[in-house]
Image (cartoon, rainbow, N blue to C red; front, top):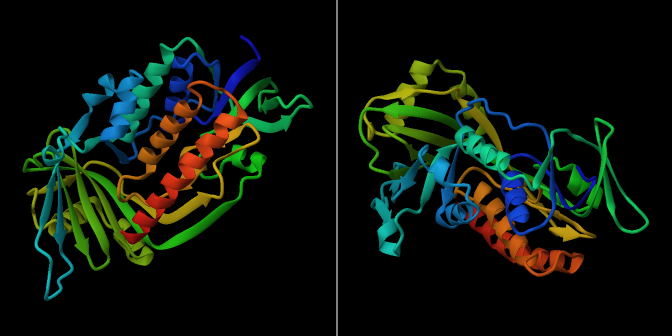
Length: 343
C-alpha cells in the first residue's frame, strides 16, 4: 500500500464513507482513516431527502439500503398547541411536486452497515482502521498524518469528516461558533397497530415539535423536542409508561404503540464554521455544521457538502478547487441555518 494519497478522509461515519466512495469513483486515490463503524442499534434514524438519495444512487450506495427504508410520500403538520385559534392541519404530498417521495427514512445502523459493505467492494479506497495522533505540514506543502499505531501517511488534500469535535478542523485552525438551544430531543423507535401510510406527522406543541416518521412496516421513529428538565424527567420513565405517553401525545393516531428501542436524550446544540476550506484542507458534515434533528438537515447537509466537493474536484484537485467549494457551501449553509432557527 502506498503511503501517499491524493486525498485522505478522516472520519468513518456516513459522510466520511460517502465522500471516500465519491472521490474514489472520480479516479482520485483515497485513504479513509477512522475506527470501524459502530453497528450497535441505538434507535436513531435518518431521513434522507430526495437529492441525497439521488447522490447515493449515483455512487451505487443506495439499492441495498433501500430495502430497510420507508418512503416519505406525505408530510402532515398539526397545530397541537391548544390555542383558541389554531391553524388547520396541512398535508404536503410528494406527487404534487413531481416526486415519488420526499425522501427515505432508515435506521442509522442499517444505513451504516450498507455503506460499509459498499466500501468493501471499492478496492481503490484504502481503509486505515486507526485514529489520528497528530497532523503536520511538510516544507513542500504535503500534509502528513501520524496514526496512533505509529504509521504515517501523506496527502495533497485533507478532508475532515470527523464530527463536531473535529481534529482536522482544529489542525486547520478553522474558527467555529457554538451555541445551545433551550431544548432537548427524546428519540425512540415504536411499532404500532395502524399503518402510517408512508406519512410523517409533526405535531406543533407548546413545548416543541413532536414528530413521528415512518419506518418499514408498522413502525415509526420519534423525535420529541421539549425543555431539557422535562426531557430528562420523561426519559427516566418505564418503557410501558413512555409508550402510553407517546400514544397519548399522538392522539392514538397510529393506535397502540410499543417501544422497540432505548429512549435517546439529546441536548440541542449548534455549530458553524467561518469557512469550509483553507490551505488544502476541507471540513464536511458535522465537522463543519451541527443542527438539531429537525427539518432533516443534518446528514442531508453533509451529503450536499460531498456533492459540492465532487463538483469542485471534477477538473482540478487543488487548493483553488477547495476555495470554490468553500464559497458554494457558505451560501447554502447560512441559508439553511436561518431556516432551522425559525423552526
